[in-house]
Image 1 (cartoon, rainbow, N blue to C red):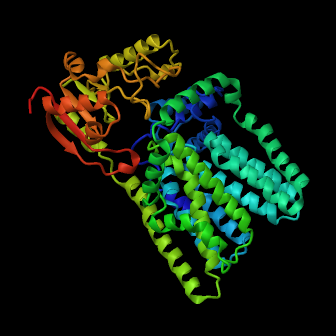
Image 2: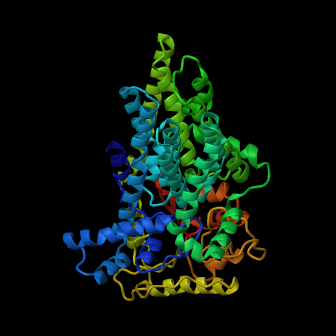
Image 3: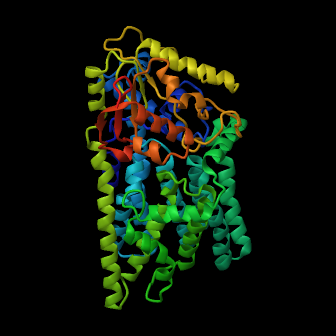
Length: 554
């Protein structure tokens, strides 16, 4: 219950995350199984669609809508309840880590208090708590990966192994359905699965067990990701974009390990210093003769699979490591570290037992502190209320270019400019724009309309792609930066005299794009900063906002 409470509290935190594909889930309800954006398998869209279908009768009873038509209208008018529903699905998937940690501890015959401590560790997993507030597949990926570990240990402990071979296959299938990168962990673990069973039961039994698990995957994965099978070419095109975004070449392994090491000791996005050190020492702690954990070869195989996956991903991505990248690895390391310490807590040597107990308690305290931070920020009042009020009261008659999210109604002429840009880029790269619902047509004559155009952005990882030398097949909204748009006179000549920036310090100093750094340097030299707002939800991509007036000179 604690695990779910931490992940569900503050689900409506004031923003929609760019990686939340609620529109894809909504389209599934209309029969569209092939997603418009194809970076990951579509199973998460189908799961969210089931939740949205369940939302309909709840809303009927609550009086939120009275027909399918008004249900649809609500989505286009204010989709917040749809996002929150999908976030609750994510929270449920993430909360399952706690009972899995507990069940694995009991499978390893740890006493009840130690198993409860492991369950608490899973409930408090800070990165899991944070990502449990964002409706995407990473949290479920971590849960399913740990579920594979559980099924493997139960397979080695079972009198009826066939059932657990099937269960292992089911968990592998689900993990790969949420995110294909699970293969980096599950591939090495599959080899370990064969070896572990062959050691105790013979090679033939090992091959049959592995074959049965893989058969489950081969049969069910295409069915649960049918949209991918219907447009395999589209999926592969998006994987090419993913490679351009993610794969780094120059000194990637060293830079990747440095970034990973720094990230691992963080309180929210990592494991905290105590559990990070425990994760590194886990093999030694497990192999100590004083540690009486059973199935030590299996635990070491799991640790090795996690470490092989970590090295592979570091070698591919280098320093480009978004926070969600390691959620499955960290969940696995946290589990193993906790198990290693819990195993030593039963040691007859009181000094060793006491050291292990105190270390686990200290790790739990830091983990709890890390878990509180996402919840605290989720419940804070977002600064969008302040920035919208500033724009409404002081800039309503100005022509605005903004990279900050706003809830203010947009002037029709500004909306038309954004649509014309999309159509222009679609023609340039010979791309078909996704079909737009009739309800998406801009509402005219709204009270309080502001002339603002959203600043052109770029997907994380595509900042240095040359618009005239694109190495991937461009897809809608995965445009490279357009050079003309990153020169301040381009906008000034069109009459934009207010420019609202988000995370100015990063784009001015740390952006990997020369175009972006030069644009913001010119902006700070040419225009006057008339307002600054500090973020209160930085975990949820809320960054400092600066408002520049290019008529009033600095």
